Length: 182
Image 1: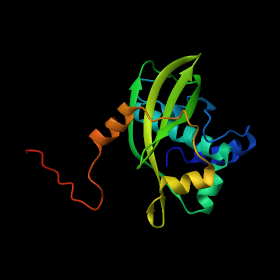
Image 2: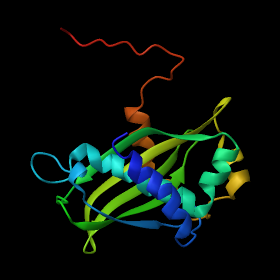
Image 3: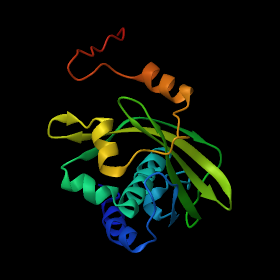
Image 4: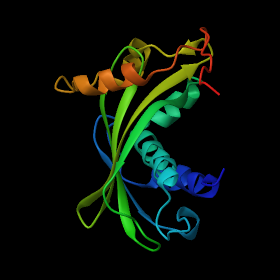
């Protein structure tokens, strides 16, 4: 809920920004706010991923994906994410969140997201997401039917598929016991 007001603002403001294709990169300009920083006076590591939610929302809204998705009763959820930090964003810094879809597999839509300031990447994340409908995960065929097929040259890098596969937890229909030695 800590980003609720910025999220509401984004849901309105992104509709007024230039339209993009869901398959194109999108850039969202922002400024580091007081609620983004931690005691070290830079953006908190966990906050980067929360802010990147805004980048994905912006892409979905500007492409029309959000409207169609909501009409169909689909909801986006994050399945896995990984992030690497290079430099710190500090209070008042202007930066952009660059967002693009990099591919699909049978279970996820993969995003590449970057925090960029002065044409330099400060942090980069890969996010595996899913769309859920009333009957469970939405199949790719339904997604492509609603939004068109991705460009032919959009091929999921093998390492991303392996990353998600190697870090996945069991499905919610299977047990996932906690077995650490105490």
